[in-house]
Amino acid sequence: MDLSDLHPISNEPALFIKNKKILIVADLHIGIESQLREQGLSTSSKTQNMIDKLLKICKKYKPLEIILLGDIKHNIPSSTFQERRDVKNFLTTISEYGAVHILPGNHDGNISKVSPEEIILHPSDGFSIENIGFVHGHRWPNKEIMKCDQLIFSHTHPTIMFTDRLGYRTFEPCWIKSMFIREKLLEKYPDGTCSSVLVIPAFNPLCGGIAVNQEGVTGPLGKIMDIKNAQIYLIDGASLGKVKLIK
Image (cartoon, rainbow, N blue to C red; front, side, top):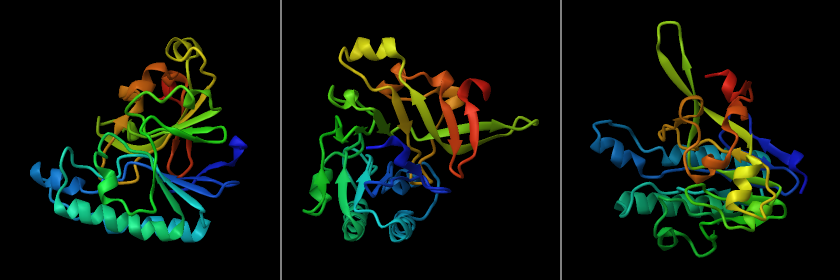
């Protein structure tokens, strides 16, 4: 697979692999509203908004396959009735637009119990399509994944922090395009050959995120990434340059 066919969709936290017609989104966190309410924040469910947004993308790009790169649901270890209902409705609806793959994240315990039969469920340590590996990012990938040319993961909900002259801080979701530090990669994976890595922003706008220019990348893969030299892109496609230049 030609890596030049990887296309972040402008103004959307979604990735499209053009030559394979594969759509990728991550970190839906369906049901997060219940946790926010417990914290005193009142907000309506974003599930239908996410369905509408995803269907709009599907109708435009016509994918053959849709990869959900982890954390489809939010509450752990148990789920609310509404969350179980919303997850099943979400998966049933989008499965009409392509074969749906789920790569379980750390919030996806028992996801199989609310998934329609036609959903393709993968191991949480990753899977690959030709020379591209996919993993949620909360655990180390299996060794075969780290032999791919490109690794795509999520989990960290990447954002970039901006501070104005009055000290007011704002956070914008972003893409992270980085490399693995060769020496650290080989310490963990002696046969590893993967060098390029792409981190996907969260699809659910309520997720919040980790500011890469302040906290780096969470999860085990962040330990072997060259964060300082990572390239940052906003959702609208604007390039902000390297992390080390936007501290």
